[in-house]
Length: 187
Image (cartoon, rainbow, N blue to C red; front, side):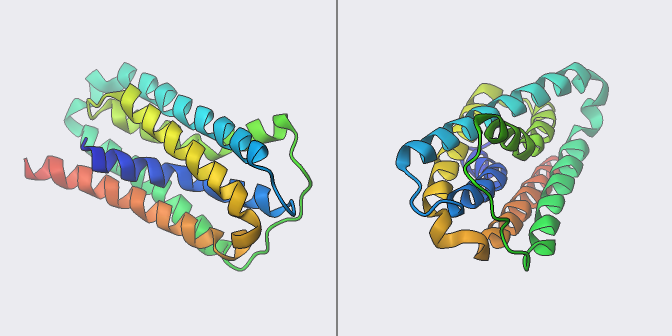
């Protein structure tokens, strides 16, 4: 997997966390940098761990599905990306819910909820023989940055553009899956 593909993958997987962080930031008039950074670090850590868990599960099964691994990666990325794009499209007219400051437990639950797609991608990566530690680290760092920025810009961006970012992230994941399939079918 090329560094560019890893970067696009990390951005695509970070969109859910970015959108959640925008919502978090939109609930406060002036979210401080410390709060934004804490949110980013929680989201980043969870997003880095979940592809490792998915990769481990995928490695257990990789010997049995080696002949169709590219189809599995394509299908998982297509489904995850399609779900993200559809969710962004479906919720485009809904206002952001009004919430108060999140407790650490709610923040962690939100981070886990937004990282489920990273576990599915981790399963896909097990079939592609990539350096999972590098990929997980990049995913975690990109997510931490995007979530931190999301909180800081939450009041400015709010719910007006969050659905567009989610649709774009889903499309990126679907394109990555299609690229993996095309690469395997043409070699």
